[in-house]
Amino acid sequence: MPQKAETITLIGAGLNGPLLALELVKRGFQVEIYERRPDMRRVRMSAGRSINLALSVRGIYALTQAGLWNDMQRIVIPMKGRMMHSAASEITFQPYGRKESDVINSISRAELNIALMNAAEARGVGIHFQKRCVGMDMNNSVIHLQDEITGEERSGTVDVVIGCDGSASAIRGHMLKRSRFDFSQEYLDYGYKELTIPAASGGKHALEANALHIWPRGNYMLIALPNVDGTFACILFLPVEGEDSFEQLSTRELVLEFFESRFPDAIALMPDLVDNFFANPIGSMVTIKCSPWHAEGSALLLGDAAHAIVPFFGQGINCGFEDCTVLVQLLDRHGADWSKVFREFEHARKQNTDAIADLAIENFVEMRDRVGDPRFLFRKKVEFALQEKFPDRFVPKYSMVTFLRVPYAVALERGQAQDRILTALCEGIDRVDELDWAKAEKMIYEQLAPLERS
Ligand SMILES: Cc1cc2nc3c(=O)[nH]c(=O)nc-3n(C[C@H](O)[C@H](O)[C@H](O)COP(=O)(O)OP(=O)(O)OC[C@H]3O[C@@H](n4cnc5c(N)ncnc54)[C@H](O)[C@@H]3O)c2cc1C
Image (cartoon, rainbow, N blue to C red; front, side, top):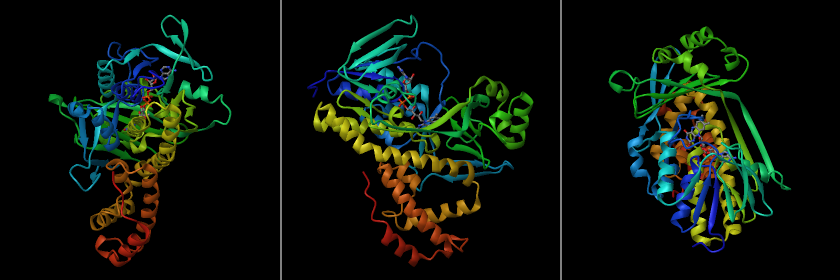
């Protein structure tokens, strides 16, 4: 397969870098990765951005193609639905889908990263830690790397560079200097903080293990994802400033008071809450869109570097891994004609990554605000009933994104059409048995073609 360029240089050994490297090595390329952080297998580091991730079908497909998924079963916990905790500590369960297999999988970010790096190295990928990319001359294909320990800088020519260096991508920073590069970034007014629910006695989970727990409180929320060691990784999402914000939680007393009044059943399980709260930084969340993702055939952006999204659909890495799937499919089709591969890659992905960015923002409102609303819960029931009756045409947006590899842009468009149908059908009724099935059938057959599944 390698024709024009033999060595591919990847910047970033986060989640996408090592997976892509593995796929490239399998196709006969030599791959070197430069990563600014120390090797997390040798140096203990804070998880940085979220301790856990929810993996779903797109991520699983890519890991299966790479031959890694089977081995990962031991480090994932399937979550069958959302476990909602009301302010009065009442618990309700909302399944994610109709089938037993409709689950999302909680996995430790660090374990996943380590498994990917181990697999990549075992196939001959070179990973060079504490080497930060500090510059790139796109016209002459030269990259500049700085040693994070000695500060020494060195430059070298490269055949092809792929920026897998995340939402603050240095490679994208250099693309920005090129003419006609479109770029937008939008921060949420919200931040997030990682917290922990320790294991109960005997290493058991203190809450139901096979669920994603949510404490929705209108303008903010707490979530918890299970770990295999019995702990839960929690994330508190809160406005940065204003009422009920991080800015207000400035003392130990205020934090305790806030949790006691808003999340009484959670605080009972969090003995180290206040220490965790002040030890962990406030993370920010951003949507980044840019174009073009490539500089002719010499450089490409992939994953968060090309399209960072907010985390509320649990799709960031699923989307990044799908990037890897699509890129290697194009390589298999066109060989190492990098200009063509990169052009077609962006053409295939951009509308889909823009769509998941928008869907993720929509889901933010749904998770924090609507999941506790009785009218929303009724719409969910109707949605399930319609799916049951018209399974080829009416497939909930969440299922299309999470359990099927339907292009995100299709999920967005069909989801909007389905929302309109749901609104029309739910108007004036409170029970599923009041549904006007004739009207439902007419609307669905007129507005939704059968869904193509891959
Ligand atoms: C709170 C939160 C929760 C999330 N939950 C989910 C979820 O449930 N499911 C999901 O699918 N996604 C989730 N995501 C998104 C997911 O974390 C990202 O989409 C994913 O990490 C992107 O992978 P990446 O490899 O593109 O970038 P990253 O994982 O950020 O890796 C980039 C790597 O590049 C390195 N790097 C950066 N700059 C340089 C440089 N100049 N030189 C060398 N190396 C460099 C970094 O050190 C890092 O190792 C979540 C994100 C957040 C913030």
